Amino acid sequence: MKVTAMIEIKTIMKAQIAHFGLILRLAHYDERATYQNHYLGLFWQFLNPLIQVGLYYLIFGLGFYNGKKVAGVAFIIWLLIGLTCWLYMNATILGATTSIVRQLPFVSKLNFPVSILPTVILIGRLINFGAMLGLTVLIMVSQGIYPTVMWLQLGYYFVCMLSFLFSLNLLSATITVLIRDYQIALQSVMRVLFYLSGVVWDLNSTYFPAWLKRIFTLNPLTYIIEGFRNSLLSRHWFWQDGQQMVFFWTFVMLLLLIGTQLYFKFRPRFMDLI
Amino acid sequence: MDEAQVKLKVQALTKAYDLFKNKSDHLKTLVFGQRAASQFWALKGLSFEIYAGEAVGIVGINGSGKSTLVNLISARLAPTSGQLTVSGTVAIIAIGAGLKGQLTGLENIRLKALMQGLTTQEIAQVQQEIIEFADLGAFIEQPVKTYSSGMRARLGFAIAIHQKPDILIIDEALSVGDQTFYNKCMQKLLALKAAGKTIIFVSHALNQITQLCDRVIWLHFGDLKEIGPTKMVLQNYRAFITMFNQWSLTKKHTYQTQAKQAQATFELAPTTVRTKAQPMTWPTRLLALALTSLLAVVGLMICL
Image 1 (tube, rainbow over the protein chains, first blue to last red):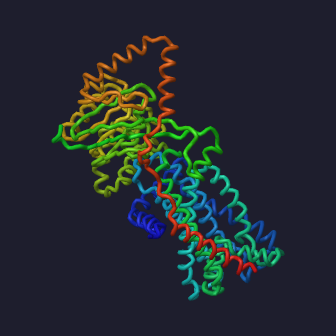
Image 2 (cartoon, each protein chain N blue to C red):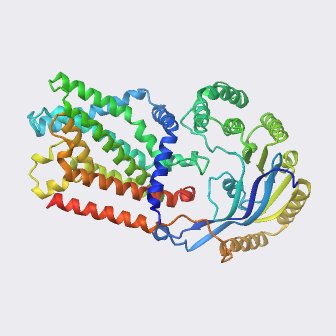
């Protein structure tokens, strides 16, 4: 007997590649529709993160860490790297949950590759992510932190991030069609995870018991955020966290497996369920 | 008719909607995959064929299954059982559907064209044709949510016919336009028909159907009551409507209740194959189990 799961995963992947042009065009339209009625338009995409960076710097950088260095670097740099990843992942995860539910009424054909809708969000937000990462690198260089060979592993962590988000988003978007509560539940979970992923404070320097800190390292969001920090701050190579790496990728594969299974099981009935 | 090209072949087509008493009932069907406690059969087994170059009207009182049928043909819904073979592309125009209120008329046109996979060059050409046909003036640059229902219908119609579908479905979308636009649409539809396209026309306006359609399908509480030449079917349909309207309220009510009851208690023959999703195969389950175990083992190794 064939492992049909592998064929299904391949089908989903092929759909993404075959319709990549469509994904790009839809992403472009999504952005336009979102900011159509705002006077400042796309400017909000930059203003919003800037306000958040300012706020967290005030509360955590000055109030909590009292201007001290975190994990050996200035807090603002440590924060910017983490927040760049977090804002992208958070926006994508929350945006993708409703991607199928929102768009399905406009999709007039059953054979439309609905599985690309979560990917549209993933690709659409990449511009913001790129811009913020660029800005972070500029600030780092201005502060005397220069690129090293370790920056090469940014590529690896970028692939990690996209794989994780793709797998989770397909699953989330499908579950939201079936059970609408999922979206609200996920919002609450993300609010909790913001503090448990070490975005604004260093989990290692907290007074939590050691076993709890080890559990925190299982969090895929932490794996990605810390990965970006390891690369940009030239701390260590990704293969030095072997166990975390295996755990992360097993988790991603499991998400992808469950996501595709649910997707193919319920796809013909999506329209009935909405 | 034997030599004519069959564009749409429908065999014993049914569509059941699940009716849930409460949320937990709904959840059970999702999790355990069992059928809902009660179902409503919007279509109870239709069979017919539609040919190229033909305009077919669909009539029937409210709740007879007209919209369900056209949604099945346009593949927005999946059938419960039966066969539906469509050769060629399908476009559907329903009132207000398929337009994004946030985007301008022009952006809606471009989005639709993009979704169809047209190149930028083709879009520029099609776009001009659609704008001319819809005749919205300066409103083409305004968000669609500011449009009147007539303007929406015009834009929807213009977009749909310029998709150049082999089968064009119009679901009561012409009833909101004014006479001028209606005439323009009718000219276009007749031209499409002459060019060998197939038109499926759902309407309560029987004079519109007479003007356009060669044959008519009369749906009645999920059954195909009659199919045949326009004149004949419409005559019988009119006679039924007249008779129905003369009945007393109680008689009407009893009649409708009985018909709905039949739609609720309808059952497929035991041998009928339902269109069903593929269940998870054993290798897939094993793979899921293996991944979960690996996840647990590595997780424990890290934590301990």
